[in-house]
Length: 273
Image (cartoon, rainbow, N blue to C red):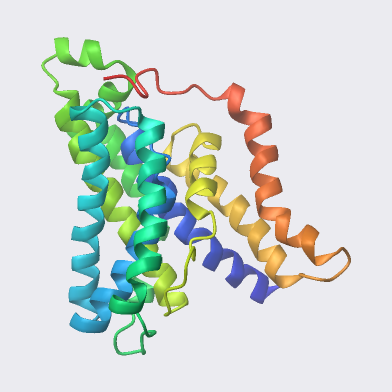
Protein backbone atom coordinates (compact mmCIF):
# COMPACT_ATOMS: atom_id res chain seq x y z
CA UNK A 1 0.00 0.00 0.00
CA UNK A 2 2.83 2.42 0.83
CA UNK A 3 4.42 1.73 -2.55
CA UNK A 4 1.07 2.39 -4.22
CA UNK A 5 0.71 5.74 -2.42
CA UNK A 6 4.25 6.76 -3.39
CA UNK A 7 3.54 5.79 -6.98
CA UNK A 8 0.30 7.76 -6.92
CA UNK A 9 2.17 10.88 -5.78
CA UNK A 10 4.88 10.34 -8.38
CA UNK A 11 2.31 10.10 -11.16
CA UNK A 12 0.04 12.89 -9.88
CA UNK A 13 2.37 15.83 -9.22
CA UNK A 14 3.55 16.29 -12.84
CA UNK A 15 -0.12 16.21 -13.87
CA UNK A 16 -0.92 18.86 -11.25
CA UNK A 17 1.77 21.18 -12.60
CA UNK A 18 0.64 20.70 -16.21
CA UNK A 19 -3.03 21.17 -15.32
CA UNK A 20 -2.23 24.41 -13.50
CA UNK A 21 -0.20 25.51 -16.52
CA UNK A 22 -3.39 25.03 -18.49
CA UNK A 23 -5.31 27.01 -15.87
CA UNK A 24 -3.04 30.02 -16.42
CA UNK A 25 -3.87 30.14 -20.11
CA UNK A 26 -7.43 28.79 -20.32
CA UNK A 27 -8.88 30.76 -17.40
CA UNK A 28 -7.54 33.85 -19.16
CA UNK A 29 -9.25 32.91 -22.42
CA UNK A 30 -6.57 31.03 -24.39
CA UNK A 31 -7.38 27.43 -25.35
CA UNK A 32 -4.23 25.42 -24.71
CA UNK A 33 -4.20 21.99 -26.26
CA UNK A 34 -0.43 22.46 -26.69
CA UNK A 35 0.37 21.49 -23.09
CA UNK A 36 1.69 18.13 -24.28
CA UNK A 37 4.22 19.70 -26.64
CA UNK A 38 5.33 22.37 -24.18
CA UNK A 39 5.97 19.77 -21.49
CA UNK A 40 7.85 17.55 -23.93
CA UNK A 41 10.06 20.49 -24.92
CA UNK A 42 10.60 21.21 -21.22
CA UNK A 43 11.88 17.65 -20.75
CA UNK A 44 14.30 18.15 -23.63
CA UNK A 45 15.47 21.54 -22.34
CA UNK A 46 15.94 20.13 -18.84
CA UNK A 47 18.36 17.47 -20.09
CA UNK A 48 20.15 19.76 -22.54
CA UNK A 49 20.68 22.63 -20.08
CA UNK A 50 21.22 20.69 -16.85
CA UNK A 51 23.88 18.48 -18.42
CA UNK A 52 25.89 21.58 -19.38
CA UNK A 53 25.16 24.15 -16.68
CA UNK A 54 24.16 22.14 -13.63
CA UNK A 55 20.73 21.65 -12.00
CA UNK A 56 20.12 25.19 -10.74
CA UNK A 57 21.04 27.11 -13.88
CA UNK A 58 19.57 24.31 -15.98
CA UNK A 59 16.18 24.71 -14.29
CA UNK A 60 16.27 28.50 -14.78
CA UNK A 61 17.16 28.18 -18.47
CA UNK A 62 14.46 25.53 -18.92
CA UNK A 63 11.90 27.94 -17.49
CA UNK A 64 13.05 30.71 -19.83
CA UNK A 65 13.06 28.49 -22.93
CA UNK A 66 9.68 26.91 -22.22
CA UNK A 67 8.16 30.31 -21.47
CA UNK A 68 9.35 31.56 -24.87
CA UNK A 69 7.65 28.58 -26.53
CA UNK A 70 4.50 29.36 -24.56
CA UNK A 71 4.66 32.98 -25.73
CA UNK A 72 4.75 31.67 -29.30
CA UNK A 73 1.26 30.35 -28.60
CA UNK A 74 0.27 33.83 -27.37
CA UNK A 75 1.73 35.45 -30.49
CA UNK A 76 -0.10 33.11 -32.85
CA UNK A 77 -3.46 33.35 -31.12
CA UNK A 78 -3.55 36.94 -29.83
CA UNK A 79 -1.58 38.86 -32.45
CA UNK A 80 -2.09 36.82 -35.62
CA UNK A 81 -5.51 35.53 -34.49
CA UNK A 82 -4.79 31.93 -35.45
CA UNK A 83 -7.30 29.35 -34.28
CA UNK A 84 -6.27 28.27 -30.78
CA UNK A 85 -6.66 24.54 -31.47
CA UNK A 86 -4.56 24.70 -34.62
CA UNK A 87 -1.87 26.70 -32.83
CA UNK A 88 -1.74 24.19 -29.98
CA UNK A 89 -1.54 21.20 -32.29
CA UNK A 90 1.20 22.93 -34.31
CA UNK A 91 3.25 23.31 -31.12
CA UNK A 92 2.67 19.64 -30.28
CA UNK A 93 3.85 18.53 -33.71
CA UNK A 94 6.81 20.92 -33.63
CA UNK A 95 7.84 19.62 -30.22
CA UNK A 96 7.63 15.97 -31.26
CA UNK A 97 9.66 16.52 -34.42
CA UNK A 98 12.25 18.95 -33.04
CA UNK A 99 13.06 16.94 -29.91
CA UNK A 100 13.40 13.73 -31.89
CA UNK A 101 15.73 15.43 -34.39
CA UNK A 102 17.94 17.32 -31.95
CA UNK A 103 18.12 14.85 -29.05
CA UNK A 104 21.22 13.09 -30.39
CA UNK A 105 23.10 16.39 -30.57
CA UNK A 106 21.95 18.16 -27.41
CA UNK A 107 20.63 15.40 -25.13
CA UNK A 108 22.41 12.19 -26.11
CA UNK A 109 23.12 10.92 -22.61
CA UNK A 110 21.23 10.80 -19.36
CA UNK A 111 21.90 12.93 -16.31
CA UNK A 112 23.85 11.80 -13.29
CA UNK A 113 22.76 12.70 -9.76
CA UNK A 114 24.95 15.82 -9.71
CA UNK A 115 23.15 17.29 -12.73
CA UNK A 116 19.62 16.04 -12.10
CA UNK A 117 16.92 18.72 -11.44
CA UNK A 118 16.05 19.28 -7.74
CA UNK A 119 13.39 16.58 -7.30
CA UNK A 120 12.22 17.38 -3.77
CA UNK A 121 11.89 21.10 -4.52
CA UNK A 122 9.78 20.34 -7.60
CA UNK A 123 7.54 17.96 -5.65
CA UNK A 124 7.07 20.58 -2.93
CA UNK A 125 6.12 23.21 -5.51
CA UNK A 126 3.66 20.80 -7.12
CA UNK A 127 1.99 20.08 -3.78
CA UNK A 128 1.48 23.72 -2.78
CA UNK A 129 0.81 25.06 -6.29
CA UNK A 130 -3.01 24.55 -6.29
CA UNK A 131 -3.42 26.56 -3.09
CA UNK A 132 -1.03 29.26 -4.34
CA UNK A 133 -2.90 29.62 -7.63
CA UNK A 134 -6.25 29.75 -5.82
CA UNK A 135 -4.91 32.62 -3.71
CA UNK A 136 -3.47 34.35 -6.77
CA UNK A 137 -6.74 33.95 -8.68
CA UNK A 138 -9.08 35.12 -5.93
CA UNK A 139 -7.08 37.46 -3.71
CA UNK A 140 -4.92 39.53 -6.05
CA UNK A 141 -5.57 42.24 -8.61
CA UNK A 142 -3.94 40.19 -11.36
CA UNK A 143 -6.13 37.20 -10.51
CA UNK A 144 -9.33 39.22 -10.80
CA UNK A 145 -8.20 40.72 -14.11
CA UNK A 146 -7.13 37.29 -15.33
CA UNK A 147 -10.56 35.81 -14.63
CA UNK A 148 -12.25 38.84 -16.20
CA UNK A 149 -10.27 38.40 -19.42
CA UNK A 150 -11.36 34.77 -19.60
CA UNK A 151 -14.98 35.41 -18.67
CA UNK A 152 -15.80 38.36 -20.92
CA UNK A 153 -12.91 40.12 -22.71
CA UNK A 154 -15.21 42.82 -24.14
CA UNK A 155 -16.46 43.89 -20.72
CA UNK A 156 -12.90 43.66 -19.40
CA UNK A 157 -11.83 46.22 -22.01
CA UNK A 158 -14.63 48.54 -20.88
CA UNK A 159 -13.17 48.35 -17.38
CA UNK A 160 -9.74 49.37 -18.67
CA UNK A 161 -8.27 45.85 -18.65
CA UNK A 162 -6.11 44.78 -21.59
CA UNK A 163 -6.96 41.09 -22.23
CA UNK A 164 -3.92 40.65 -24.49
CA UNK A 165 -1.58 41.86 -21.76
CA UNK A 166 -3.24 39.67 -19.13
CA UNK A 167 -3.03 36.65 -21.43
CA UNK A 168 0.61 37.44 -22.10
CA UNK A 169 1.33 37.14 -18.39
CA UNK A 170 -0.82 34.02 -18.18
CA UNK A 171 1.12 32.30 -20.95
CA UNK A 172 4.36 33.07 -19.13
CA UNK A 173 2.86 31.29 -16.12
CA UNK A 174 1.98 28.40 -18.40
CA UNK A 175 5.59 28.18 -19.58
CA UNK A 176 6.95 28.25 -16.04
CA UNK A 177 4.70 25.43 -14.81
CA UNK A 178 5.29 23.29 -17.91
CA UNK A 179 9.02 23.76 -17.31
CA UNK A 180 8.66 22.58 -13.71
CA UNK A 181 6.63 19.55 -14.84
CA UNK A 182 9.14 18.60 -17.53
CA UNK A 183 12.04 19.01 -15.11
CA UNK A 184 10.27 16.77 -12.60
CA UNK A 185 9.78 14.07 -15.23
CA UNK A 186 13.50 14.26 -16.02
CA UNK A 187 14.35 14.13 -12.30
CA UNK A 188 12.46 10.82 -12.12
CA UNK A 189 13.75 9.44 -15.44
CA UNK A 190 17.05 11.24 -16.19
CA UNK A 191 17.12 10.31 -19.87
CA UNK A 192 15.19 12.04 -22.64
CA UNK A 193 13.21 9.70 -24.90
CA UNK A 194 10.80 10.40 -27.74
CA UNK A 195 7.29 11.07 -26.50
CA UNK A 196 8.25 10.63 -22.86
CA UNK A 197 5.31 12.77 -21.72
CA UNK A 198 3.06 9.86 -22.82
CA UNK A 199 -0.10 11.94 -23.16
CA UNK A 200 0.20 13.68 -19.79
CA UNK A 201 -0.59 17.03 -21.38
CA UNK A 202 -3.94 15.75 -22.62
CA UNK A 203 -4.75 14.01 -19.34
CA UNK A 204 -3.89 17.18 -17.40
CA UNK A 205 -6.15 19.21 -19.70
CA UNK A 206 -8.92 16.71 -18.98
CA UNK A 207 -8.27 17.14 -15.25
CA UNK A 208 -8.52 20.92 -15.64
CA UNK A 209 -11.88 20.55 -17.38
CA UNK A 210 -13.05 18.02 -14.80
CA UNK A 211 -12.08 20.45 -12.06
CA UNK A 212 -14.15 23.21 -13.61
CA UNK A 213 -11.10 25.39 -14.37
CA UNK A 214 -10.47 25.75 -10.61
CA UNK A 215 -6.93 25.14 -9.30
CA UNK A 216 -7.73 23.04 -6.23
CA UNK A 217 -10.40 20.97 -7.97
CA UNK A 218 -8.06 20.39 -10.91
CA UNK A 219 -5.37 19.20 -8.48
CA UNK A 220 -7.82 16.70 -6.95
CA UNK A 221 -8.76 15.47 -10.42
CA UNK A 222 -5.06 14.93 -11.12
CA UNK A 223 -4.90 12.73 -8.02
CA UNK A 224 -7.66 10.59 -9.51
CA UNK A 225 -5.83 10.17 -12.79
CA UNK A 226 -2.52 9.65 -10.97
CA UNK A 227 -4.11 6.89 -8.91
CA UNK A 228 -5.30 5.19 -12.09
CA UNK A 229 -1.75 5.33 -13.50
CA UNK A 230 -0.32 4.03 -10.21
CA UNK A 231 -2.73 1.07 -10.24
CA UNK A 232 -1.69 0.32 -13.81
CA UNK A 233 1.99 0.25 -12.84
CA UNK A 234 1.48 -1.65 -9.58
CA UNK A 235 -0.81 -4.39 -10.88
CA UNK A 236 0.15 -4.57 -14.55
CA UNK A 237 -0.47 -8.14 -15.78
CA UNK A 238 -2.36 -9.23 -12.65
CA UNK A 239 -6.07 -10.16 -12.52
CA UNK A 240 -6.80 -8.73 -15.96
CA UNK A 241 -4.74 -8.60 -19.19
CA UNK A 242 -1.87 -6.11 -19.20
CA UNK A 243 -3.40 -4.27 -22.16
CA UNK A 244 -6.43 -3.45 -20.02
CA UNK A 245 -4.21 -2.06 -17.23
CA UNK A 246 -2.29 0.09 -19.73
CA UNK A 247 -5.53 1.61 -20.99
CA UNK A 248 -6.85 2.33 -17.48
CA UNK A 249 -5.57 5.95 -17.12
CA UNK A 250 -7.00 6.90 -20.50
CA UNK A 251 -10.27 5.07 -19.83
CA UNK A 252 -10.69 6.93 -16.54
CA UNK A 253 -9.99 10.19 -18.37
CA UNK A 254 -12.64 9.50 -21.01
CA UNK A 255 -15.24 8.43 -18.46
CA UNK A 256 -14.59 11.48 -16.30
CA UNK A 257 -14.88 13.89 -19.22
CA UNK A 258 -17.99 12.15 -20.55
CA UNK A 259 -19.65 12.39 -17.15
CA UNK A 260 -18.72 15.90 -16.07
CA UNK A 261 -18.02 18.00 -19.17
CA UNK A 262 -21.61 19.18 -19.48
CA UNK A 263 -21.84 20.03 -15.78
CA UNK A 264 -18.90 22.43 -15.66
CA UNK A 265 -19.20 26.00 -16.86
CA UNK A 266 -16.60 26.77 -19.49
CA UNK A 267 -15.07 30.26 -19.20
CA UNK A 268 -17.29 32.34 -21.48
CA UNK A 269 -14.36 34.14 -23.09
CA UNK A 270 -12.37 31.00 -23.87
CA UNK A 271 -11.07 31.25 -27.42
CA UNK A 272 -12.41 34.78 -27.98
CA UNK A 273 -10.13 37.67 -29.04
